[in-house]
Length: 401
Image 1: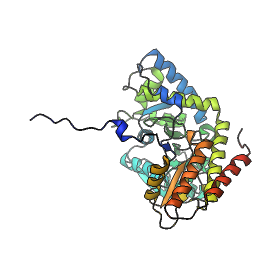
Image 2 (image 1 turned 180 degrees about the vertical axis):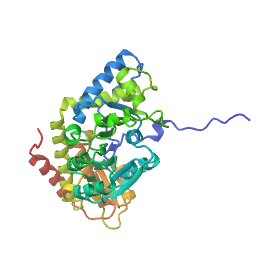
Image 3 (image 1 turned 90 degrees about the vertical axis):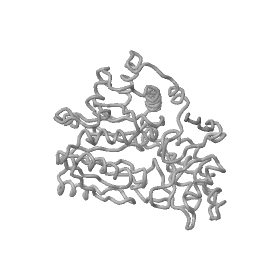
Image 4 (image 1 turned 90 degrees about the horizontal axis):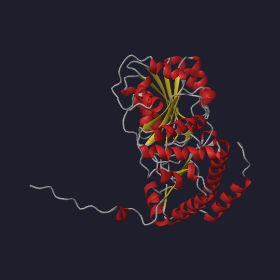
């Protein structure tokens, strides 16, 4: 019996007539130059690609704030880079301390368990940053070889602002620090060398404003010595850092690189370097603080208080009786703006990463949020929210530039 050709709708009949403004926890809007680069295919082993890779490594060293000669691209999402970090450093029996603030920090612990690690999870809570004293005590108690932590926990919108101090405590115990910076790299300071972070992981689709599916990972010399000294063969061939290193540094074939995604990430990194990190940090801080002021001006409450609040993904309490799914559907259908729900808590999250941090996006998003909440039967003051947003933008004084 012959196979039946399926009845398939063309993309234009599935996608909205106008693209949604992506203001959730990622992916984020991408600049035109990044989108154009993503439409190009070249030979992944040719001289042109080699020149592009060299530039990417140089730009990455600036963005990661490191002199590391062990920066690799990963054909996969940020989670693939997370797994590359874990499986290349965690052998069966390796002691691992996972600082857990939510979904993604927990994922690092799960990856370490699957690699055979002896994992201790320190529950740091989903509403506050990890306490450096408590982490130091956990290091003394468990004596880990590897510590995993997120700088910004996307799921709970918590900012682990004590990361530099935690890295110092880990270094004193000869413990390697693996840091997930998927939603924070280039949106706020992360100084890999100065702080003593041994592995930094990021995805393209958030702070860097590139496409999903191509990620970056940087290893310190200390971490790379562990990888070089490994005697066992990894079961993960594609994520073997030593094999990947041959492509990124010796022009040797590993697998067919995602050339279009690499070109897109090259352009995203170039735009970061063109803007410079200090100006970029100020743009992100200005926009995020203004958005937060606008949200409070509406009469809504922010999910995280004080210095534990993550600026790159903002969590918002919903009024009693309003479900996140109802609000998300309404704001998307009626305003063409997409925001995110959350894992567990009845909150919504609005991203402030890369191209999301543009003033025209803030006004559109805040107005859409306020009118949607009001349309669903809850009291908010849209005019006051927009006024607070405008005032906070005008009053911002540069911190980094």
